[in-house]
Each structure stands twice: as structure tokens, then as C-alpha cells.
Image: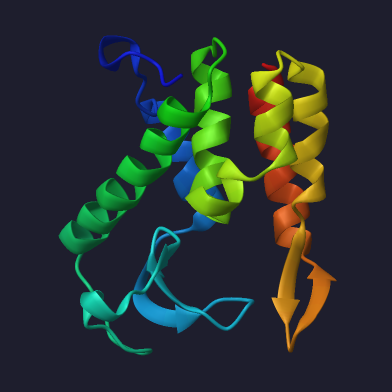
Length: 157
């Protein structure tokens, strides 16, 4: 059961600042570790964005893309988590969903454990999400290892 609208959370300013520090803020479209076009604060470029590698965007467009991306991540946490969360746990989960995507989050063991009130089991699941695919091969990303450590630390705070 989704959390009632009036009780839904949004990512805190502290959480957004941490997300920006994890993702960085890029004005020029580049290819990320997995070869996906990315810009702004970890925004995966969509065909509807009308952007190509090397294009530059403004600070305002970065803010708009981030706001749009955060809506989807926040909505996923509010809709699919059925147990109480404090603000730090919510922020950690939004960061996690922002990175892995809503569909993967919905199917994750992390979510299943969390919704079973197994907070420690859910906490342990973060670190399993450390792989990227390069040339059809799963490879550990040091950046994701560090990110998951941060998200675990925040979730546990």
C-alpha cells in the first residue's frame, strides 16, 4: 500500500546536496562509465532532451532536469516502500533509485526486505549494487562501491 499523499516525503536539501556531490554537475553532455550520454546531475539523456555528446546546457536546464528526475525517484520511494522511514533513510533510497532506476528498484531484494521490516537486511543489499556493464560484461565500479557506502551510511544514520 502506498503512503498517503499527505504523508509523502520529498528529498531534503541536505540529500540533494549529497546527491550533487555523488553525481557531480556537468554542463556538457558526456558518455558515462557505461557509455550512456549523461549531463547535469547524473541525468541520462533521453531522445526527447534533443541533446548530443558535446552539447552544453545552462544551470537552469540542469536544475530542471534534476527536478524532473527527482520526481520519479521520490515517487517510487513513496509508492513502493510500505514501512516508516526517517528523512535520512528516504534520502538514501531516493539517491539509490535515482541511480538504478524505478523498475530495478521495484524488483529489488532491497525493497522486498525493507517492506518486510528487515531494515538491516535492506541495508546490506545496497552494497550488492556495485556493477556496471561494459562490453556486455559486469564490472565492479569503484564509484558505485563508494556511492553505496555513502547511501548505507546515510540510511543507517
